[in-house]
Image 1 (tube, one colour):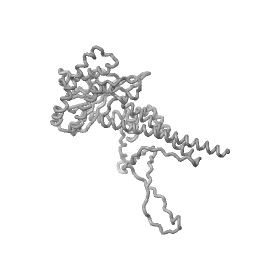
Image 2 (image 1 turned 90 degrees about the vertical axis):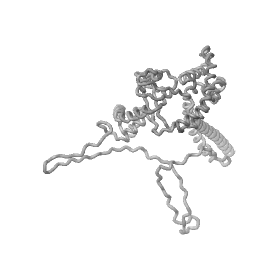
Image 3 (image 1 turned 45 degrees about the vertical axis):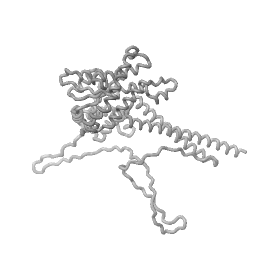
Image 4 (image 1 turned 90 degrees about the horizontal axis):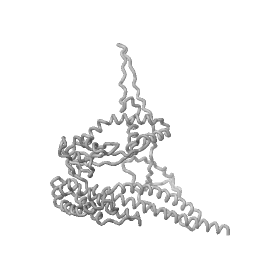
Length: 442
């Protein structure tokens, strides 16, 4: 009786564990596919908004937790099934794993073959083939001290002492090798790991590098890399056209964090058939005052594609001493305002609290996307071919666009703060501002 009750209880526990593992595995798989679909959408249609970038990060964190929980539940289900003979063990379906990169070195470990047949004991064995199981492994970081020895010699004839020169160091009085310096800089600027966290991690590995020491090395590297930065700056600003934008970034101040700005100027001639290598130039500032773009673009006189930020007006001024910069306004920035009111997927996640999809915004997004499709088709073509296609296909779409903005402009001026119109009015204002600068075609 007791054994039967125990078997029944174990069977119930195994069934419950299997059901929990099935649910966890299914939820993790669904989240994985949702993340892959969203990434594919971004590859096809480009970055649609900053909200989408944050959504991807949240989905990746959610997938990480779900995958870990699903694996725990799967192992628990296997252990529960092993204690009973009536419940089948569960093995969840996982997304297919990509093969290991071909450039990684392979270390071949061959298991010793048997000396004789395990069935009859014969020693006449011939090889039929082999099965290979690949396991990804990593060699932990190793620290070492390189001792560069400079021997001294004395001349027996004139008693002159000679010695080879000291080895070159990237930084003055440097003690850190180039690989260590590159790692510190990448961790700080590429992985956003503050120097204090780096110092703590190195200390746990038995290396004492204080915060002040690391900061001193970063400052020295910044000076050493300044000539390279100057070359990139000259290369970017020598372009015929630039893409400009800025974004906010938190900056430490005394006792608080303030909102700074990163200004980015990109040279990329590949869509125009150019052969110059693409490059990006960055500047930082503690505010968004108008003098920043004027200072950054002081020697530039080409075409600037940017948003409708009024801070660029100074460089567009015909009376500019160096000559005016030609404005090429950005459809992506105008599209962003409309997309917020036409994002069906975001509204579905909000549920009942979601606002109604605006038909005006939805139509605006569709029209702008039609222009984007045309541009994708002529990327890399000659200037003459791109001009021909734009005149034949893009110009009619732009002419259809402006009357719609004009017809909504009076309502925006009358009710600019209306909840259902505020975002549309912002997009209409940007589009009309762009249109006024480009002669009726944004």
